[in-house]
Image (cartoon, rainbow, N blue to C red; front, side, top):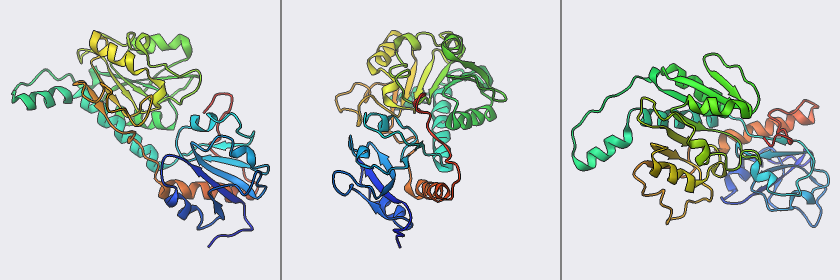
Length: 316
């Protein structure tokens, strides 16, 4: 049953059916899908994914914005976002899903899955040399909660793990690099690059030919591999294809793309050394994500501080 005396919620999403989110949020809050009129002073909270441009500016009493997804670039695509706190989603199952995806793709590249799949189609019985995990260096770009969890799991499997972030980080067992000065040394020491960065003006298009060409070229896998499970616009797909054709890049696993869904005519679909998944590495499950949002609303109304706040200056 809704409780109108508590803060009212606008649920504004595009790209999927909001019904499941509506059902869960409305168990504890009064939820609407559209503001009431040109301005709606009754709305205290907005839960959004790629909200309609300008819709948040119609809410003069808006107190907090909650992002349905792990990224928040979709919010800042609207140049009329009010200056109120933005909470990014953090949930154990989302972190676990991403950790599983990263480990799956790292192991597939490490254990030469693409080669064996090709051999199977040709009925070839051949066992290539398999380097041990401790000879392979996995580099993670983005050492937030997702990157840190994935790094820990990879360490447990025996891989050497590097990390790169915008600011210095100290994590046990990980060789950490940061900032522009640390990027080239990080890449030079990396055999499998895992990209988990947020999308900001500074990271837009960062995975380009120049970056890929700085990955370690003489490593034990016969060439570097790329895994992008961050944001699609972090990468330049024409550059990835060029790197694959030039031998700068051995293989790629891509879960996100510059434009989604990936166009049927994209050469990535049929490239023999590219593994495509449909932005499925860590799907936002409302059953796990709605309750923490509701708890934060309750806590905020009790005067407690919000958690997982977005740094507007940094963009994430």
